[in-house]
Length: 499
Image 1 (cartoon, rainbow, N blue to C red):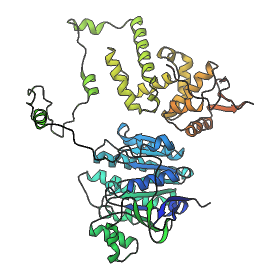
Image 2 (image 1 turned 120 degrees about the horizontal axis):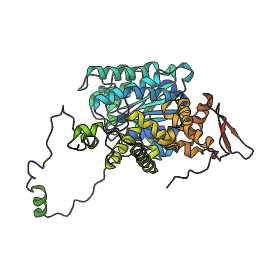
Image 3 (image 1 turned 120 degrees about the vertical axis):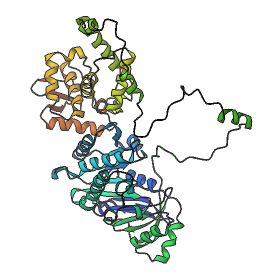
Image 4 (image 1 turned 30 degrees about the vertical axis):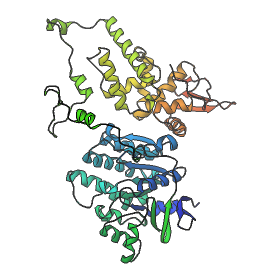
């Protein structure tokens, strides 16, 4: 089946289409100076092809995270994950055919390269059984495949360049179709750019870039001047997926917009010269009150680090304070307060869609405010108690042998799926209706109902549950070996959040 997606219009007003199947086999290179419309072109391509093919976007500026709400992409905050975690995330995204946006905004250049390389490595290294077709879009590709060494370390550059080379040179047999966009061809490694057979060239001004663009499109050098005159959103196209001859086209409109919109001109504020002088040239605060500049190698501690470093005051008799163990009543009160903090944390409707690292920081701050400064759980322990809290299981209930047994069974699943199994087990144990797709999606941290259904299928394939529908189309989930079964529940029922 040939899938032709509409990218825009030619100069004659005829729809300009792109053969998606051909693109998957031949890859795409996009060039254009800043402001030429590269990101808009990529967004149009992603939106039009979203129903047909899995996608992932390497996004250094966080421009494409808005695809999540409209098209169900999973946004991965690279700052909240280790390189190993991102490699594993890449593998799982490929296995479960989840479209993703790797948001690298907020990281320095060194860590952007390392984390992008780890994620691309995960996409590349999955087993042959999972080599599904996939568009891999890399914006600002010259950052990840530089032609020459820059300010980053040699190791980071080699890792990233190796991952990009694998994507463009060896990715086709694994179903990976690279779509790379760059501001300047001269800054992009030649062995990465050379593997693309389709080209979309936008406005550029430097002679070396115009000449190279003309060569790629099979145009004469004297025709290279045309690239200076292209308007924003206009490109010259060539390639088996686009056109057999150089073709000018204008990219069509998009359904979503970048998070960082283009700044518009606005009137200057009506401020008198005296007011401006008073504001700008006001006396500086005392030296003790001014924030001190730190040398670049020394990291500035954030608010959470300062809170965790603060120690509660000790009584004069320190030995006595250390020797006194909390009573059972105090331990029970502490568990109740922790449960209350977790319920307050999860009461936020957006809590289900926030990264685990962000939730952990919020939890620690709330604990400090409550005076629970000592013996806080680490990130791994927090993930476990959060999983139980999302299923409505308190810390006190978790001590029960039954729920410890459930946790052992859940541990056979990936970390991000364990909470779904525990939630199903809680509903089955109490005879509650089977959770709906919206409830499962929110507990997993996604807005995609299709992904929620795939999660159930995966857990069933692992032999942990059995799903079936009754005569009214309501879903019943049975927990294998425990013989617990949920009451029938409507899979499409709207989620009701606890107030």
